[in-house]
Image (cartoon, rainbow, N blue to C red; front, side):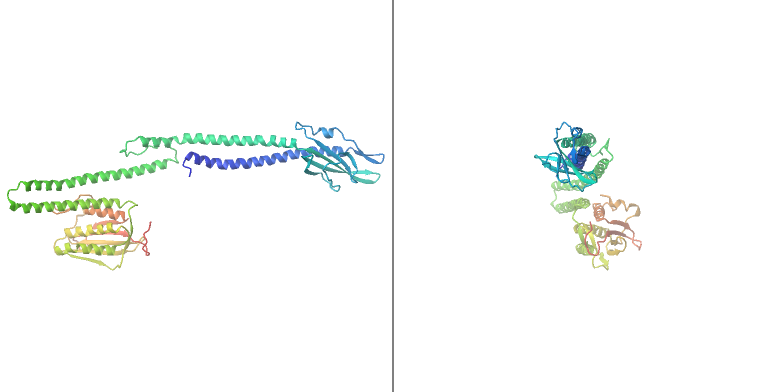
Length: 468
């Protein structure tokens, strides 16, 4: 795997250009061969025609006089050898070499070309047939001219090599320009890298796009969006730590004061009362600490890495009701569940959803007076997509409409000062519901008293498989 962007882009350019140069060079070579062959063949046939024009009858016999011009046209720096043969149709040799490698077809009406070997060298040959008349007698004479191919090869090189050199220079120039262009054009993104490397580790300010190209700006925008989300998360965490420290400071101060008071007691009879107060303070701090941990876990459940799967709300609600039955019995509260569903599958984390129902039902039990009623309802809401609706209703004092949004804030409490609670229950519930892609609302029941908390969670498909 090649990691260098420069090299990868260079290969994207170099490979097709190399293929193009190769194909272009091959085509240029073929054209050069065709051109050189055409020039040589025209010289050969011109020489053969000139020799054929010199064949005549003399004293009843054919004779030929080879003009010097017929051979001088082949003069070249390559010093090619030229051979010829003038042959009658009865194989009578009029001129030239008897071992000339030509087998003329006396019936041919067009010049015939071929390449053969002669004296260990390639030879380009043309055979030209001419009719010769004498007193009504028709005779055929064949003039064959051959030339070695050093000049032919030299002409191919002269025609082909300049084109090849131009293609190679173009390829090298393209490579150089790509390397130079990438070096220049990558400077803006490298400046972003330098800015990131030089900034303070605690800095969460957005990056500057500067002179960054349009195609690369989405990268910086995505980084800035991530920084913005990270900044919001850090702000939440800082606020959480500050709030937690503030909330833990009070019970710790109370416990410390009670310990100091106990150490100064002179009357042993009052010690059990102080220990009871210490126990109550310790229990409240333990409850607060557990709620803080639960809130932290609820916030973490918003991450895509948090484990989720099919969860049956009916089974979870039944388990939670069993755990809280003792508290309901102690306050003589009618606690029950109303549903016609055998199961209600949603995509979530079972422990988190159990914590959500636990907080909602526990809140209802705590704020409902003795002899009251708390009811958990589960139903399926048909729609696109379908939802399961969990409702927890009570006939307690309720929550005024103007503060129903605020009760989801951390440490906000809509209760009397002497009433126990941390102000974290509904904040935990909201985090869990949002992580499960659901919604929660607080309303007044139809009978006009108390409070009903309604949670809507997307239903899983009928096959019960969690969707990504």
